[in-house]
Image 1 (cartoon, rainbow, N blue to C red):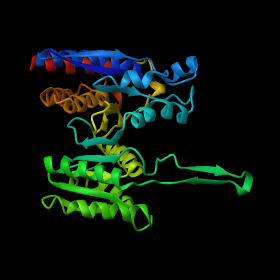
Image 2 (image 1 turned 135 degrees about the vertical axis):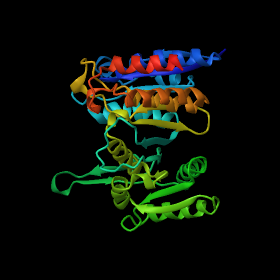
Image 3 (image 1 turned 180 degrees about the vertical axis):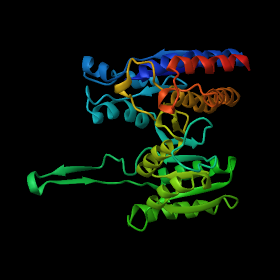
Image 4 (image 1 turned 120 degrees about the vertical axis):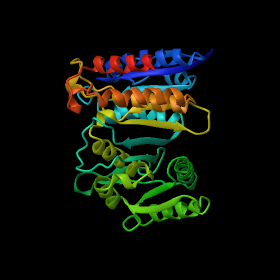
Length: 352
């Protein structure tokens, strides 16, 4: 039996409720497979941990994480306890950077039973591939002077290596899906980085003649994802643009509570990390009404990444059937508790 080690970080808020409750589903899926066993190393790293220890994770935290096959993360952040720039850079972004998780992937698709705010969602199904290591989120820059003379400079860094590997990954995904790739740009307003981005995209497009490509300015693309989301397949975007588009994708689905994400390491040196898009939702902690779908869809992406696509497919089938049957939490217009949703999905998986 193959043992797969998962680093489990419930994090803050509803993450502490949802993540532990979803592990039984992973265990049941492992039983169905019969050839694998999940071993969980659980870590209490969170804002509460920071208040007690002065750090978001211990000095040997990254060493522990890097010994696992994947990282299963809940939600990070509680601004009432710890400023976001401390919690995120001390845990989430630290893991992304030091585990070299250079690509972020977030799907968005119409799910029957989830009311989209769009009048005609038309069964959309698109995937955003986001550069995850540099771009607009680089740490290059600084502040000088004070008062009316104060200056803040934030440098966006785009390297050919990072830009090309992100686009190549997106081209390969498009090749496996519907053969269509859209590049998010803003070369009519950002005069250096975005023309460079366009150039690399055009060069790589020549290597994939069977992929239908287009470039859309980010402002127009945001509008298109609202007016005609079913027209898109794979979208590739810079760090900031991808971040914005994926939250928009969650919104057109009908709830950020169902949106998953994967942070992918490409070189095999370190584990990839899987996290839901929703935050820690401190306003509903302890009420038992947190939506577990984003975390479970995230688990599906993790299973796919680990080469367990059949199990991931079973999980996603159970998720969609459960929602379609009206078993859903309050944010989706239902009356079910978090545990009722999880238990229903669990029962479905066992019945297959």
